[in-house]
Image (cartoon, rainbow, N blue to C red; front, side, top):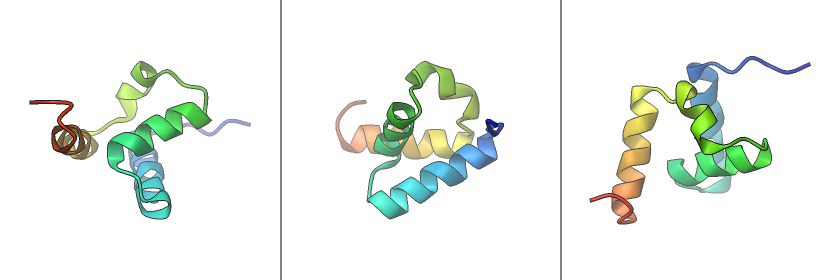
Amino acid sequence: MTQKITPKKFSIIIEDLVREKRLTHLEAVMYYCEKNNLEAHTITRWIDKGMREKIQFNAESLNYLP
């Protein structure tokens, strides 16, 4: 039985990955997608404003974004 994912649950999952595996938020999202056979564009509905800001900060730090 699959569990319904909400933005709140998704944030908790990603924050746990960041802590446990010492990943950035961007890496944690990509790791989650890879482990669950999801395309990155399919999870955008689960990303809330706070998570979006953390991902943007990670991307800017890695020079992926200006």
